[in-house]
Amino acid sequence: MSYEQEIRRAEERFAAAVDADAGLADVVRRRALRRARRARRPGVVAVACFAAVTAILFGLSPRPGAGDDGVPQVSAVQRKVDQYLAAHPGGRQTGLAEISYNDGAVVVTVAGAGPSLLASDCPTGWVCFYERPGFGYPRGKVSDCGYQDLEAWGWADRIESVQFTRGSGAASFLEEGAVPLFTVDAGNPAVSDVGAARNRARAVYIAC
Image 1 (cartoon, rainbow, N blue to C red):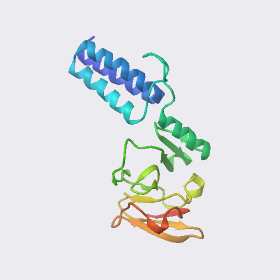
Image 2 (tube, rainbow, N blue to C red):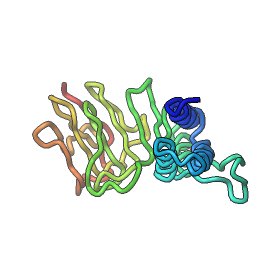
Image 3 (cartoon, helix red, strand yellow):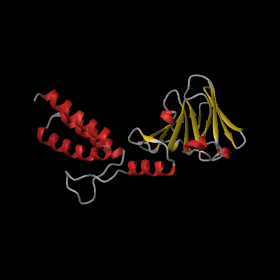
């Protein structure tokens, strides 16, 4: 097998493991690191390091007492996904830390890769809301125009920071009785702490 083919196969094995079961990432990391030490090839080392960093960021760890090839325990992130789905049924896991509701109209990410450091990570084209000040996870996001009932997705009375990354329009967060609490738009896209409006929003209206 050529050098390039070996690197490509290592990348494919890692990607397949993450897609199939996040818990397998740690097993792949260990095997990749062993191969890298034996081969002493920069490309293989890079693949192994990428696997290792990804596993650490998402809290993957082997089952205590298990060998290198043992079945890993459920990751910390997966536990959060399971707990969220149990508390807010009706969603479907669509990523390592991601749950989608209503065919992707609402997407919840239960954990980020690390501390937000007061920097929002809302993807372009969405309205994001966070359970903690400073854009602290869990994070929910919506993109459809019109009225969105936050209670239907388990987000009523729990929003403490928000960001707007759509190119136009505005998003108004409403409390009980459709009373406006605050609005974000392109001119005022991020609120790291909604202050007195914390944990009061029950709906959001997106004007497109």
